[in-house]
Amino acid sequence: MSPSNSPMQRWESAAASNPILTFLDSMLRGFGQVMFQNSPITGLFFLIGLFVGGFEFGAYALLACAVSTATAYWLGVPHDSIGAGLYGYNAVLVGVALAFYLDDTWMLVPYTVLGAAAACIASAALGNILGTWQIPALTGPFVVTIWLFALGIYGFSQIEGSANSQAPALPALMEGGRASLRFTNIYEGLFKGVSEVFFQNSIWVGIIFLIGIFLSSQIDAALAIAGSVIGLAAGWFLGVDQNSLSLGLMGYNGVLTMIALAGLFYALDFNSIIVAAIAVVVTVVVSIALTTLAAPYGGHIYTAPFVLTTYGLIAAKPFLHRLKAVAPADSATPEGSINLYRRIHWWDKRGQ
Image (tube, rainbow, N blue to C red):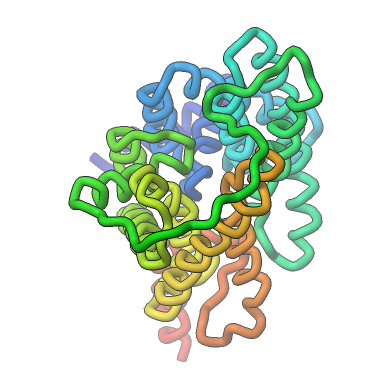
């Protein structure tokens, strides 16, 4: 089968000529962009994984993604950005988070619609502010939006937190030695570290997500596993409680951090892998620190550790001369960046 007749090429051709398929393609890419994959196939696997985790997660993620994408079109956001899913992924996370932390009543539907529209505006605002320094918005718009919408329920009588919410409380000081991790705890923490990016506490959902990433980028799938494992190991070494380790709560920020820094916003090489691994360890420390800050207010940290750590390392790129920075506009899968480098390098050599 020639590349021009491949299923992906046929889908892209159909999507380009049909406005309904164009919108659907943008939405699926929005799901994929949660883990930096500009691929409707990956997005479809992520959506399937959410429905496997629970119907409400898939349904509210779809609703939020559709609302945010439609809002972006309505407000006149450049179509290239919408088509790449950049105005869908933050809303996807908002929809899943609201379904996870709030009671599933009829009020959750309009609240999710409002949150998705707000995520769209937040994406444009943060993208504009951070773009001055060539720093991508990442999941910053999601974090800002969900912090406001999740904490806002304490002042409303018609919206209530679910059993997954937590009441405001003082943080507890950890005591005792390190948790004893058995093999079951390790592989649970590994796959759940991937699934927890979408608030899913499931080994099988984590496996579905990894398959979706693998179909877009085999390197990113390996980096996702590495990020989850390093986060798990760092949490164990520092003495995080066993429940948090087994649930993958120390790994999901590491998954995003590893993919972002080892091949996406820095070219994939030995130096970027080491820096990304160190950054994953830092996200564990930031996770515990932010949890301590948020606990008295009944808040959660979401992907803030990944966002803050990655913002810092990307902002520092003018001084990190051992790393090859990639502009956000040029970022792609590690395979895409490697192939681009090879073509440019071959052309340079030919012209000598």
